[in-house]
Image (cartoon, rainbow, N blue to C red):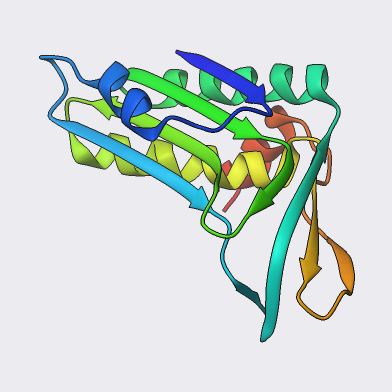
Length: 152
C-alpha cells in the first residue's frame, strides 16, 4: 500500500504491474487524465499546486482507510502536481482485490476522498488565455468524510 505526490509522469503500466498478484481476481486502474474541455470551454493546460507533505500524509491516510474498509491486496495512489498538458495523467490509482465489488468500491472511495480532502488545487488555463482556479479540496479530514458517508 503506497502513495506518492510527484512532479514526475505517472507510469500507468508500472502501476498496474505492481498490483498484479495471484490472489487478486480484480485489478482496477484509474487514470485521471487532463481533458481538452471544461464546461464548454477549450482547455490548453492545467496547473496543480499542493502542500506536498500534507498531501502525501492525507493520501496515505486515505489508502489506509480503504485497506481497513475493504479486502484489498494492493493499493497505490500517485498524484501529480505542476503543469500538465491535455491527455496527461494527473492521478493514477490501482486497487487489487479478490473480488470486483471491493475493488470498485475502494477505487471510488479513494478518488472521491482525494478530490474532497487533499490539499491539491487545480487551475485551468483556457485556449483564449483566461485561467480559473477550480473548487475542489475542502481540507476535510478523512475521519470527517467517513462520518459523513456513513450517515447516508
